[in-house]
Amino acid sequence: MAPLPTHFLFFLFLFTSPALSTPSHTHRLQSEPSDEAFTSVLISQNGLDFLKDLLVTKAISSIIPLQLPQIEKTVKIPFVGNVRMVLSNVTIYEIGVPTSYVRPGDAGVTIIASETTCNLSMNWYYSYSTWLVPIEVTDKGRASVKVEGMEVGLTLGLENDGGTLKLSLLECGCHVRDILIKLDGGASWLYQGMVDAFKEQISSAVEKAIPKKLEEGTLKLDSVLRDLPKEVPVDDNASVNVTFVNGPLLTNSSIGFGINGLFTAKEKALVPRNSWNFQLPVLCRDPAKMLGISLDEAVFKSAAALYYDAKFMQWIVDKIPDQSLLNTAGWRFIIPQLYKKYPNHDMNMNISLSAPPDIRISDNNIGATVYADLIIDVLEAEEVIPVACISLVIRGSGSVRIVQNNLAGSVKLSDFSMSLKWSNIGNLRIYLVQPVIWTAIETVFVPYANSHLAKGFPLPIVHGFTLQDAEIILTNSRITVCGDVSYAEEDMLRHSLLFDAF
Ligand SMILES: *[C@@H]1O[C@H](CO)[C@@H](O)[C@H](O)[C@H]1NC(C)=O
Ligand SMILES: *[C@@H]1O[C@H](CO)[C@@H](O)[C@H](O)[C@H]1NC(C)=O
Ligand SMILES: *[C@@H]1O[C@H](CO)[C@@H](O)[C@H](O)[C@H]1NC(C)=O
Ligand SMILES: *[C@@H]1O[C@H](CO)[C@@H](O)[C@H](O)[C@H]1NC(C)=O
Ligand SMILES: *[C@@H]1O[C@H](CO)[C@@H](O)[C@H](O)[C@H]1NC(C)=O
Ligand SMILES: *[C@@H]1O[C@H](CO)[C@@H](O)[C@H](O)[C@H]1NC(C)=O
Image (cartoon, rainbow, N blue to C red; front, side):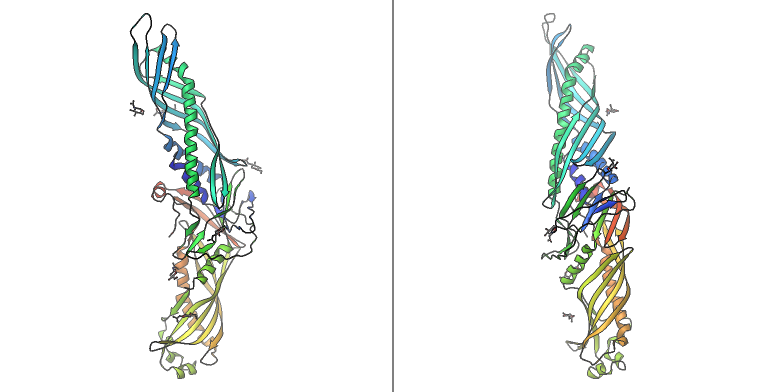
């Protein structure tokens, strides 16, 4: 059961958002004041069933073939006498799990597999001698054994241990109801002797071996969970803090997690500390969706603050559709003072952010307000001479979509306002330059923003799992993504422990 259970919990990692709920039930993840969760994740019953099926399949393939210890016994058989019997190379080579279910509860997550069957093969050997036949009689052959009606149950404890998930096996049991033995060859007395003598022993060997394997698997899975990264890279400069801060919160049909979810600078720790009262549910319209992830507005604000702080949000505009407007000659009659001071000089515009962009999420709308300074430069030989600065407040509306496991978006310009900050060329009547600035924003700024937003940033989804049929719900101050997931084996093998990142 080694590699398998690992993946199962990975999956759990998927789920992070400010808090979780579905129409049928609302969960609130309360947090310590200092440890807010800005992203919440909810795994619904359907999500748990999906994980459970995956886990059971993986568990079976990692358990088999399972070698059990050799069994030996001396049996008294009527008319034959004392017979020494040995079962060797006892191997479980097939396990069938027709029905299983998973239930989260106060104590942990319980998984029960019932009506489980188990096929074993083994070599048998016997020897005896009696006073009738003083020489030793021996024989050997193969036997196949079917274990039927086996119940396997385990309860996994899941807790947040300083920001990582800790998994433990709280309970594990295996009970064999019935056993059928079939011999290849051998005498009929032998068959009955085997059944009588070994039924108990084979049962108890199976009942011991399976929980032991499950325990090993749980330990491996736990170590994988502990090794999960606490940050998921977004690009060269930013990553998302995926430290678990709340939960796990178990109800009778879901598991919820809270993660920090904020953007942090790659190199330096940038901590935007809003005093924010964490209490957000995950709201999915369709409770059948396997997974819900809610992201608080604070996640987007932290991204905005981070990129603003990184200081590379600067654009030099030196090409516009009407290039004549980037020469003072083009402004000869509009701003005579500019032309007089710098006749026939080329110009450019230097746009930089003057404050972190503000992002507001409301019902069915995402609004962004960008504060920027636009400096008009005159180019003289090697020199760049700033001649005026205009403050811009640019408003746009955004839309989001899912691209694989990323939340991507785009913005549309709604309007902008501007005011003169300073000028060396007299009192600029800025409405006269408005069309040029509008063009600069539309041809440079908006495409730049959209090229970044088109890539989006990774939702906390474990590699190998892909979001499907996702729907996005915008509500007051939060974005919720609800969807199903699929699982691709090859991806998991290639990067078993890595998150999707671009
Ligand atoms: C990530 O989040 C955790 C929990 O909120 C916090 O303790 C930690 O300082 C954060 N890390 C960074 C780099 O901001
Ligand atoms: C032991 O059992 C396995 C699986 O049934 C079989 O492939 C192998 O040949 C057996 N080995 C011996 C020595 O009988
Ligand atoms: C294993 O046992 C099951 C149930 O007894 C049976 O249906 C199946 O055919 C067996 N598989 C093999 C390979 O013998
Ligand atoms: C990362 O920051 C550097 C400057 O610090 C900048 O040149 C680069 O474009 C940034 N990368 C991304 C993907 O934003
Ligand atoms: C889960 O709990 C709710 C009440 O908290 C109850 O109404 C519901 O029947 C329970 N569901 C299951 C599957 O036990
Ligand atoms: C653009 O303006 C910013 C802010 O005033 C300034 O720091 C930067 O050096 C300017 N860039 C160029 C290339 O002139």
